[in-house]
Length: 196
Image 1 (cartoon, one colour):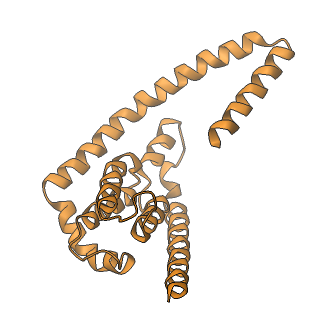
Image 2 (cartoon, rainbow, N blue to C red):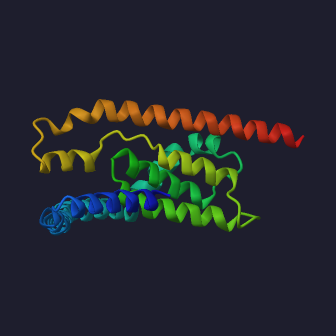
């Protein structure tokens, strides 16, 4: 759906520019947009490589495993359908840690591995399990303590105080996460009650 919306916006903008005789402006924006995209990629690449490397070191040195053990009691409450030693819980904990540091790109591999582990235990492969839905909510609304990527973007574009968004980021992501998990809990409970 989002693809159709963007195609609609691009088509309307292009037709308007052609209709008003500003084809040169359209051509300049197409070329400038591509160049801006490459510059942004080159600016963000070192940051992504750095944090992905740090997360890999944390995984190899068992820091993520220790963090996983620390949050496992909370995760077992959020995922009651999973056994306490389920391998997906480790990946979920790693995903939470990466999201808390604002490293969405570094969190993605852990999220994919967690979903793969959850899918292995799924009896109906074409339907998401309760654990999968809960993890999706937890991942999407993940609490961000330090929005590293956004702060670095603000620094690149000359923000006077790039880290001023930390408090609002924590509050916004905390509210979205808590409200999502409450809704998930209510829906899950209603589903279980209707099955009895």
